[in-house]
Length: 285
Image (cartoon, rainbow, N blue to C red; front, side):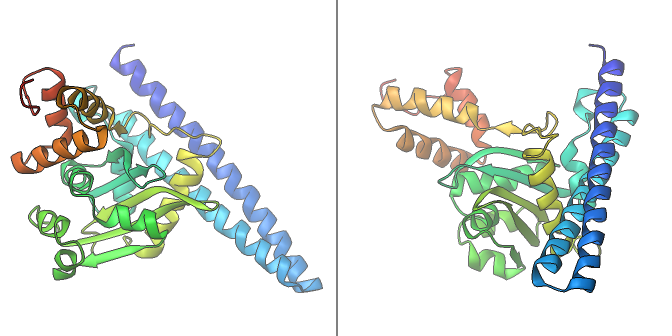
């Protein structure tokens, strides 16, 4: 598929998703209004509770529609250069009032499964969490609650991750969990959001919109429209290293993370060197 056709198809798909999201928002709003009428006439906590739930659902779908529309505009303006290919996460970051945002999906043990980032600093921040085993995305996914830290608090809260994060020039981080019924599948982090729309409430709404409509909803695409980067390369390298070193995969993974931190490289870069044979971490291999 030539770039022009690919661009147009992706833009149209995003517009269709946006239109469906707005339809769902309208339906949820109508249901909320009906429940509010019932609550006013007949009373009852149930009707008020349902009205609030429908209002939250409408807000979620509207947020999703705006993200899709922004992505469609970017895709329509894309010139076809792969290095400048629009990222859906760039639209997410802008909606949160910052250039830097990252979405991390976690497994049941709160280990990173995949990462989608808006820019290099946010991706580096998630690589640091992966390597060091601590940070705001991990804490938000474990607690299921919003995590916020700024200034020296970042370094005090995360003794290893904090100084590494602030060395990137980042001074504030705000992270919301990606909550589902009875569980949490990851977290959405924004860096240096500052004043304005990048508030906790805005981030929470966008995190809910991503969870319910992009990752798990009727128009779900866990690949975040070709923007997700899985840790498959690292897992493959850990498997190879475990055989070479005669150790557990978990221990091989720890070796890769340690080497990445020592070399100041992304874990994926270290993993690729192990896979192509240019880096030997096992003695005698």
